[in-house]
Image 1 (tube, rainbow, N blue to C red):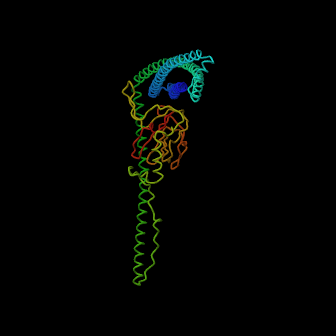
Image 2: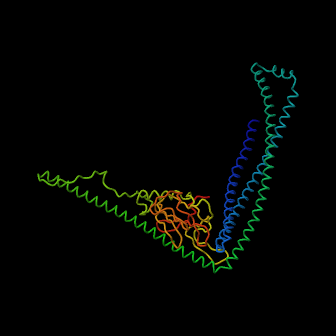
Image 3: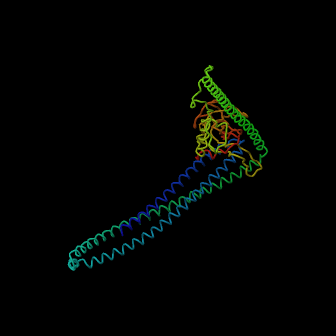
Length: 455
């Protein structure tokens, strides 16, 4: 009984530690990720402040800083709640351990008193010789031996339970100190959050003061965006038309092969009839074996998938499926950087200004390597609206990389995920950045963020 009780106490103690350690580890990992993000945002924001033309980017960065800081505070809140729960569990375990220890001591005390009262050899012998039979005497001897061992087990259990109790009390003390330290960090972060919000208000006031100038800048961006959209759609249409032509050529080749096969079949039949009738005819050509008849070379399209000329080859279908299957785990085009402009329409807080983006703009130092996010084929390298762009085809999907200062690939070149396409340049406001776009064969722009792996 005492062994089972001791094992139960050990299991409760260890399970509480393991649960806390796992949860705390996850929270600490997330905390470090947010802190790294805040460091990047702070660095980018400091650089942007030097550029008088980048008020919109300053606002975007300060908003992201605030969001990241709020996420950090929320993460710390969860950590504090976890600590509170752990402290409660430890206090409850200490209370139980104390009660169990008191119970063990009482039972042990009674057994010691009983042993003291019956400590003489006379009582021991009297107990044995009063047995009704030899077997009964053996049983009584075994009982006395077991009783002595039980007292030893009781004593060991009391000692070990006392050690566990001390460890629990020490752990509780550490938990409380960690909680106080975490609360101190939380208070500091809340103060910095208030400073960030005050700074955001100042940036909004600056934007209001030069709203007309920024409106002109946004219009320039919109003109550039529309030119890029036209260029991208032209590339997609060209690729689709070329794929259709290839399909049509394969279809015509197949029809011609079928026509020749049919003609050979008729000639063979006529020759057989003529031989039967004794008439000599020209010897027809051999019919190609069934397994050597030409095929279209088209890939098998799944029943639940609509036809796309860009998936009419096994290679095209494989690239499409590979791109789709890696949604949420595609690598980022740059090794570091901060998303300063999100996909879609972004409204400038406190103003009537808003801007549209067909991708995500990532702030990076000028000259950073820009890498392909998936296996594919380069279908365009050109300059659009004064900025260099690379477009890569992945089956029926396309990725675009804009704001490059140089390009190191050429059209029709096959590339792998991670292949360097060129170097990053500057955006229209003069800041180091690249724009990543994802499109499908319908010319629809997709939000790249859900396709990329989390950082």
